[in-house]
Image 1 (cartoon, each protein chain N blue to C red):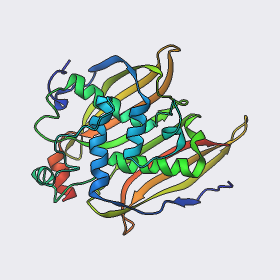
Image 2: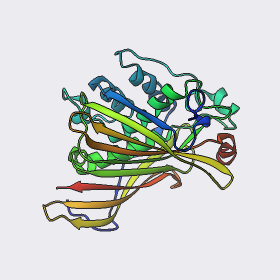
Image 3: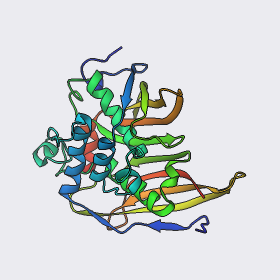
Image 4: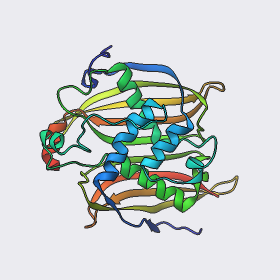
Length: 147
Length: 147
């Protein structure tokens, strides 16, 4: 893949449904328990409307790690899972809440391409997730090696 | 040392761990499934790669150990995820995980806390993952902007 600064890779939009938020919420105690069974979370701002309103929100919002994982997913789809074998970095900041049923598109923008002496290239990327109106909800950077 | 009750009690310099950890294939599959990351390296191999985003769960592990009464008077909100990986971390690898409360600080009227976490291959004493987690401890103030 030939890449140059300014090139963008965009994901197909995904709707941040209530189910997607809940899948993440309940994955946390399930992973923590590590017993092969499903475990359910205590109420959170990510899956319980009443609890979210009690925290000053109009409704549930997604956990920022969902958009972070969707950005990681786009990195892997774009450059292959080899990027996890070599040193890399990913930084994300959660700059706006993502409410139920908002469409989310993840984007990678090439900022720099460095040829490596041992072969391959080091990519510096801006990464973000945006809603259907193009408003940024998660912003950050990534650095990966590609072959 | 301000561990033992709420996450909002943690103080700069508090040490978290070290703890011995082995991440299981089930934990990787479950986490990745919840985030719709269906790559074979996560789902279809006996020793899947641990996605670097799972470093966030090590912070939650420390919260469970050191802050058993939860977040404190206000819900906390995750603000920044910042991970660097130095090679592939595979499920089943014995790890030593430790953390430190790097700083607590005020910014635009809100209080933030940075926690630094490292994940090392126990046998080789090799650094595999470095993670900095930033949370906002005054969530109700942040929620006013989100609403």
